[in-house]
Length: 234
Length: 166
Image (cartoon, rainbow over all chains, first blue to last red):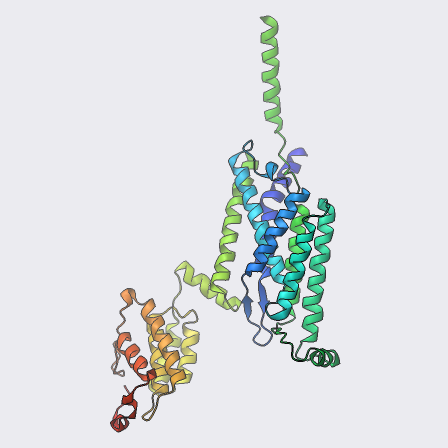
């Protein structure tokens, strides 16, 4: 039973978790063109890398990731390499999660970027625990997702109704450049965020180390017994 | 032992998957069929569809240049065959050529195609043995297209009206 648990835990940490994060990274920059229905891959802009750095620093500060337990000289090299790859995947998944909910260009891009930067910057000085941080991230990404893929996309949809007319009248003279993407883009973004949050849920502050196997335990016990019997005979 | 095996599998899989993602973002495929074509190119098993190429050639010889280009586009979707790209460039040249003036937009597209052909050809040298063509090398075609786009006093020469399309 314990062997199964160890194996499943290893599968989860070393295969499922990086796969989830990398998939979030893949889908985070994918858009579908509104007219041609062709794929558009948008590499993470510089600002999303900055946001990802702030978020990683927040993870470390609140103890969502205990770096000295993730990368330590006391564990095998393979484990360190695996953990390092997971952390790199987390960094790029974070950047792509931001990329997914940031408008691509124009005034809205900068408004959203400033909103994210301000929130993450002020969070650096707040009292947080990993659970609260996760809730806060859910709210941030959820809000940005709704604003970008429901509100803004709805307002600037080619078949937009009176709301679109009203907005364009109110914002007359202000250049808000919103590229037309197919509705599938919203679904892709949703899945990217779901995978990212799923990955965050799987991350433990201290990686669970495998228990010594039964055979190893018996060997250790046997050695200890033989040492004690030797000392008694001496 | 099992733990170690899972770790090695995880590291290998993570690196391969990350490589695939980087490759996708670098090549920016526009559809699943382009992903397939790019994969074939990367694996070195990409080949131009010879039947479609010949169909395009037939259209080209009948001066149906746009149709020929469309057929060649489906014969060489990855734009990886130097011969096909040479012919695409030639089709742009012949369609864009004019006795009084050339169509710059078509000539520019032709130049892009011929540059692709040159970059794909081994050592950058490409020669096509087709008796129906008057220019047999990619370098000749490139020069012709370059000169067609350039603006100079020679454009005002009335003798230009007597030149022939190659």
